[in-house]
Image (cartoon, rainbow, N blue to C red):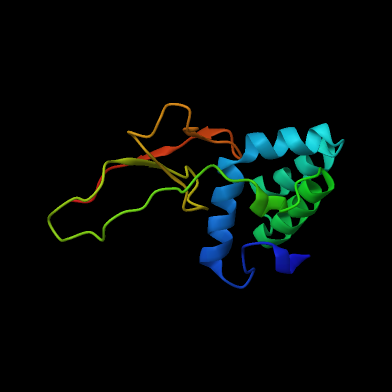
Length: 137
């Protein structure tokens, strides 16, 4: 089943991206697996992540739990939209607004300050507010 997930446990950037996706979608993940009776299993996986556990192993387990909950695509079956695109920065010319980023620096998740208010502005995994990262200058 590991082949059905999006990250590659050998690629740190890929596993960091996975952690960001888990954080952003945690509320929905919890609701789905809890409704399927696997809330306790999911909380054990999340506790291991909070303690610095293996991201790839947690991804595989959450993927399995979501499939068991009826989400055919598992972890990759939960999406919120296209995400943020952008233009490459040019020295001296900021190309984007300030953003809120992972408070513990474990994932690449970012929320722009002008994103809609319903976009979570906290790390659901660590229960901390996202940290302000000013725009590049």
